[in-house]
Image 1 (cartoon, rainbow, N blue to C red):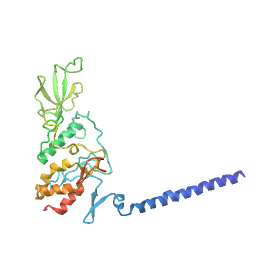
Image 2 (spheres, helix red, strand yellow):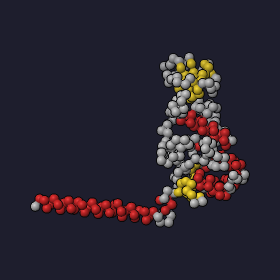
Image 3 (cartoon, rainbow, N blue to C red):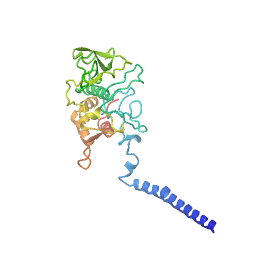
Image 4 (cartoon, rainbow, N blue to C red):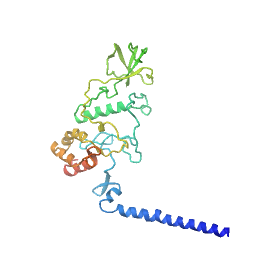
Length: 297
């Protein structure tokens, strides 16, 4: 009698397993697939892939680089937001990542071996802003940035006062500018500023970021110099697109108004009118320019 009950219980469990397997393993996935192929939904379900001449050239949801083999920005294309996903130029969809660096990351790790060196977030921002300013013909200087592109940060060594400051320094080092670089500041509190010796530890000094006289209202927007959380943001701000317009117009031999019209056509406003910020999809914009105003090879 007990054996018969045991068999019935296991047969019931087996039937439940088979029914749930059919429902969750076959019926539900097929239903989701069918719904996803309905007009208006299939594009997003398939990854929002974009084709050109029968070949997939990217996804409207994933950023990519528009550079040559050496990582140099191609003059005829709008440039994407910087990426930290994967190695090289980033934009690796199989290795989405963020830098995990915050506002306190202001001191570089200097090393003779490039693999051991590490830029602080401040130096990354300063370097990118300088490069973009030079490329786009705008002022890329920013507060707390040295003209060299390094973070303008000093290590002030000397006896501390009651408030933790150093009133009479014995030595001052520009910690992000390795020798033989010329420091961004000649003197600090009457002490000559030195360049940093690779391998030396200056953490015992008072770390002092120097704001400098650069305007806080920089023409290079923040999305041009910092990565997104995923490192694969496909969009840029209208402000970043705007400073690239003259370069694009010159490279494609068209008017700036024509480029601005293309930017406006690929600018999406705030979701529901109030969520997020206006944005420009870089891949769609570049493809539209290639179609409307192709460059001569």
